[in-house]
Length: 541
Figure 1 (cartoon, one colour):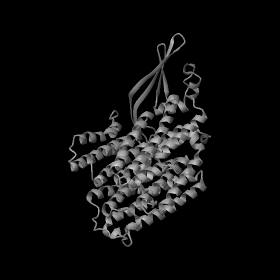
Figure 2 (cartoon, one colour; figure 1 turned 60 degrees about the horizontal axis):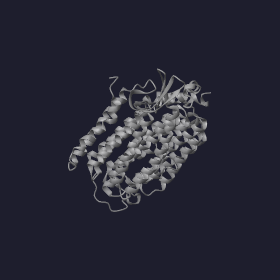
Figure 3 (cartoon, helix red, strand yellow; figure 1 turned 90 degrees about the vertical axis):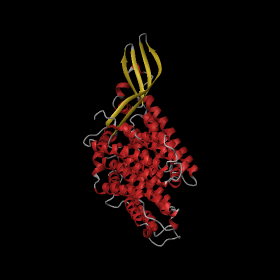
Figure 4 (cartoon, helix red, strand yellow; figure 1 turned 120 degrees about the vertical axis):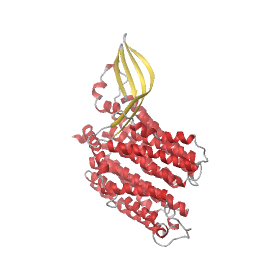
């Protein structure tokens, strides 16, 4: 089983569904839905097996798959009378998982299956919808597994095209504007990212091999090579005469520039204030099943990229900006919470809530200790589950009432008690009620930050109080009290709606009462991150 390509199977298994759907008549709507949902179960089962087989007692990457992909000769230079240097640009197909990416891979598989079930609300062009849906799922898997900068970028870009069409075709009234805004903002972030990646590849992404009459130099986006060159081999390479003119040495100014570029690139996806406005349009105009993926998974790609590339490749700069990152996190928390409180549209309440909760991720990262980093990753998983559940319920409510405006809803507990009960549980999880996943993630992030920034921690904690206010205002206003408008007779959750609701609630409760399910595979990796950051920065002294 050591050579079993489990990661490739997880990543590309959605293509099975794409190929099947391409040959199915578009009139077979019911079978198209069944096929697509069944295909999402394949990576879910495989990722569950991966989670069980993951060795929690060791850090570092596991299940690594490393294959050559593309090699492009650049040029050849004569050095002296007998030596030749050959240069190649390489793209490698390298996949692996560690304690950071493993939970996000499983979260992607789980939320994707739940969103596929929630796609029962889609009314048109089911074949095209599910083809784009499965391509989006494949891209997300690749993002969380890729260990080559070019491969990561390719998968990252792959997620943009399906989302653009899923928003622009199946969204609500202002869907085209929302899709365009999504593409413009995320395209700008991708442009900044690829520039930073190209600089890294052309400086720190090389290896050299001695051959007859010279050396062969390979430039690639291999994350291990770049990390090794930046932190382990710098002194030995800088002075080698055979690399004169190709030295990868990066000045402090260039390192700061790259760190800030990656912070902005991934901050747009996170989203980081003030790069958040595009996300509000997506949350309100995209169909609920797609917002489940967007809020539950795509926002997490920003935090994942920031940790994997921004923090771990430039720890000196990240630590020096620790206070700034904490302040940015607090701005996200308070800004999102205050504006969530005054919204009259429940989808906007949840959108601003997502901004606020992503601020907690920044707080955990800025702590630069094991507890804080664990809290940040816990928050990614917890918020992914909670936000997916929230928008699943939003879809159910809109399907029955044709509105999600708070001043037009009320008293739904009488008509749809099951949906109302699930909404109440999700609201309690969002505000951090003990016994649910939201409490664990927030507790760890704030405790981690308290060690270095107690005052900022106290200010950020105000967001928890505000969260209780806006969540209770929205949830209780919808479920209890008199109906504010005359609503049609409603049927409670159907079986296909109840399955994802119960499943997501179950995971939220399990993480709340048994957090070691997540902390065990996560801990050694986070300890390794903490030790690495301390060893290469002034924190080590």
